[in-house]
Amino acid sequence: MRKYLVFFSLMVVGSLIFAVSPGVAQPTEPYPIGEVSLEASAVAAGVGFSWGDGVLKFRGKEYKFKVTGLNVGAVGLSKIKAVGDVYNLENPADFAGNYAAVEAGLALGKGVAGLVMRNPRGVIMNLRSVQQGVQITLGVQGIGIEMK
Image (tube, rainbow, N blue to C red; front, side, top):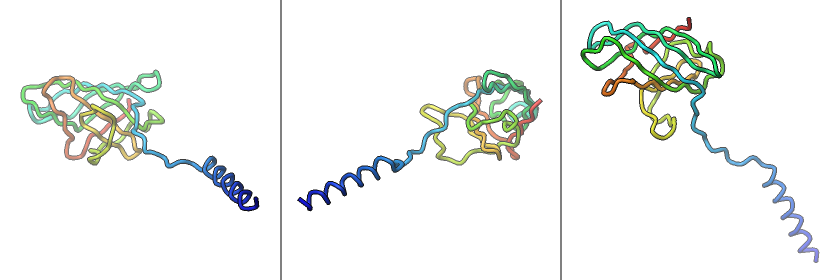
């Protein structure tokens, strides 16, 4: 009888420990918290552009910004339009800054493709060209975002 009591006590304690201990956290993919759209003018066809304007849509509001430093790989374009998703944004002011390419292996979800960049505040932007066949790349210094 005593053997069963000890066994039962150990089972109860083990069950309690299992019930209250946190499980192994699975990494979650970031989810888009905002949207971005921009339009920019080319400096020279096939070379890139140095200025543009955009709009960040975040929590039901729109925030205007200026962008510099993107390159366009298509010859003959004088304007480019791009859209994208924004991740890890808590405050609209954190959207501004210099963005650099994100290291390979960042999972943003199935079917997500484009230019994936991150700023020093951890905000991630996935930018895609609206024009078919146009690939957007970063300039040497990355891209700069300045809120208006």
